[in-house]
Image (cartoon, rainbow, N blue to C red):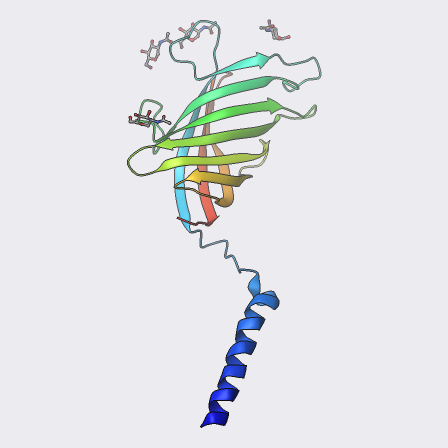
Amino acid sequence: MKVLVKKLSYLFLFLLVSQFTSPGRSRHIEESKPCKHLVLYYHDKLFNGTDLSNATSAATANATRLGFNFGMLVVFDDPMTKDHHFLSPAVARAQGLYFYDMKTNYNAWFAYTLLFNSTKYKGTLNIMGADIMSAENRDFSVVGGTGDFFMTRGIVTIRTDTAQGDYYFRLQMDIKLYECYK
Ligand SMILES: *[C@@H]1O[C@H](CO)[C@@H](O)[C@H](O)[C@H]1NC(C)=O
Ligand SMILES: *[C@@H]1O[C@H](CO)[C@@H](O)[C@H](O)[C@H]1NC(C)=O
Ligand SMILES: *[C@@H]1O[C@H](CO)[C@@H](O)[C@H](O)[C@H]1NC(C)=O
Ligand SMILES: *[C@@H]1O[C@H](CO)[C@@H](O)[C@H](O)[C@H]1NC(C)=O
């Protein structure tokens, strides 16, 4: 009996040690199984010079002559809604910037925070990535979060839902978080 207990305790010790040293320590993340999943719509109404009350973004640096808006910087405070409608109640705000950064096609780089202040979620998601507009789906990185999204990480897959002229576009943002601590 004593020997068995001793053997078992060695086994237990071995399992405990291997937990912290083996490659099994790195967690296996399945793409199809996010720990949190939200689909929201981002509405960007670029200031056209007169629509002060409805504009949600403005170019703060103009495009250069390199083509495809290269160099144009837009700062935004955009509503995020659960459906396609611009006038639906915003469940979060997207605050940040994008700028065009390609000479041979429309490409932009985004860096922004999603601010949640609702009964469901309070906190932020910090997001960045390349918007390669020629691709149907583009992936941004969720590099961190606060509040209900404490220390999170994940992927935002974006898709252009509509683009109407130069002054309004809407993106579907499929937010998949793979690390959740809350
Ligand atoms: C703002 O949007 C509302 C609703 O779409 C519209 O009725 C109004 O004319 C717009 N105002 C301006 C200044 O563009
Ligand atoms: C800007 O948008 C408003 C509202 O949609 C529109 O009434 C106005 O004519 C537009 N101005 C320009 C310069 O496009
Ligand atoms: C931005 O650049 C465009 C094209 O060169 C020009 O038409 C427009 O007036 C410029 N806007 C500002 C605010 O400088
Ligand atoms: C969140 O919403 C509450 C209630 O509307 C408000 O009092 C508070 O100032 C808001 N906080 C932020 C950070 O916007």
